[in-house]
Image (cartoon, rainbow over the protein chains, first blue to last red):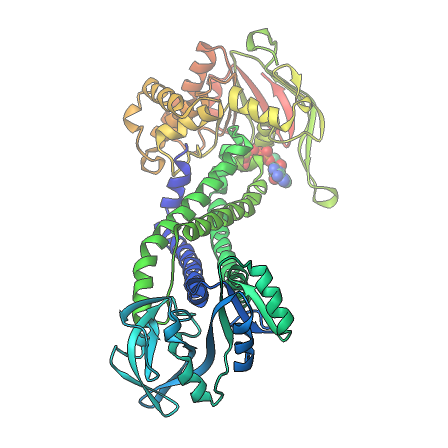
Length: 368
Length: 232
Ligand SMILES: Nc1ncnc2c1ncn2[C@@H]1O[C@H](COP(=O)(O)OP(=O)(O)OP(=O)(O)O)[C@@H](O)[C@H]1O
Ligand SMILES: [Mg+2]
């Protein structure tokens, strides 16, 4: 009897396949969204995560580097340096700028840092080397792939020609990619010598971060100071607030579509086999037995769909990343488990929606 | 609930009426029907189409509630059973045969018989094994793995009887079991039911309009327009 769940499904193979396919698509959509989110999340904040410094100093009211602007002057920079207990400071300047190739151009998140300070640069280099001169640039891997830039190529930014010396990863924020130049070049390019977005501050040993922070705040009330963890968290929050609403909306739509498809199939199956169900009821089937049949079917279908989705997903992602390299995804086991759990929960909901149909089958129906 | 041997009557109806619908659209399906059936007998409920046979059988099985009158099933007023108890009674003590047998198409013959045993509380394995023994008893064990749509009418009826008696029920309710059979096959199914009622001392109630099977009945109840005409 317990084969009933499987057998009734198998008796309509085309319908079953379409349903599994439809649900698998929803599952793939969810896998993909999570993967893109993880990819973008890492790409957005990996720069901050890897540039471990004691304190980040920005203009007041600027809490992150992703959205919001901050300007710190050279004078303020010097004042920070003079505070006792401050070991070193490194300026970093972020500017949105267009890189030209032929007649196309594409905006990058141009990051100027001081190569002599050994901080503020790309999180990981996968080719070439880091910049050391003003006419050099490091490009993000996806960006370089998309526009076919290689090490030793020349790129043009506002009439300046820069040589690509390295390729970085952890620098693809999905909507935009980081590129690295010297802070001096960038200041010159925008015409504000000495200007920075923020300063990365290292503190002498024996000083607490809290002490130095409050001292900077006291001396420079127009600036704000964050320790590394807080600043990283700020940026993560900022990235989430931009990304998650969209992610949740699309994932919810996927979930609803999945539930609708599945409850439709289950309901049609019940209605088509009313007589079977009526016979089973008459023969003394406990309520739970029939309900479990439907739940079993829902779980079987959704699990099959998850398996199909898993088989298709990874090759599909590889293909997408090949076609559009700026889509950099990251799938973790936890993500996949979360999606599978969501899908199984939705399939339970669909089965509950369909189970209500059982009630409309009268006990007498088998005799009619 | 009493054991079968302690019961004078397996089923007893007194002044039972069943009215479907209300006001202008009402149909009186049964009117003041009183009758009974005991263990060891095959009662034939005879009547033309629309006379109320199916209504009466479903009332007895507790699938419907009477509009008035009382039905006692296994010695207790049927109203005193909860829906869950009625479900358990059907699973444990009643067997059913339907007009077109209504075997479940997506299950094998063995599973069709086994399903009743599952409701009866047996494990899947027990049900499976027991079902096979029943098929052997009816000499259709070679059909065990087949699906109902591939069976002949004669084979189907044997499976239907095997399913009906699988739970060794005290009461078998059969609605038009010969309805779609040629007379030879029709006789066979009635013969099987008769044997069951005699050998096992169980009660079998058959609803039919088929006059040819009269001779097998221990007792005949004639229904006409919902009224019981005579008992013979
Ligand atoms: N659920 C119902 N709703 C309304 N009327 C019903 C219902 N069930 C049966 N009836 C009516 O009750 C009367 C008796 O029907 P029933 O099915 O019991 O007769 P029957 O003797 O079994 O007939 P048949 O030989 O055609 O199966 C008929 O007039 C029928 O139309
Ligand atoms: Mg009938």
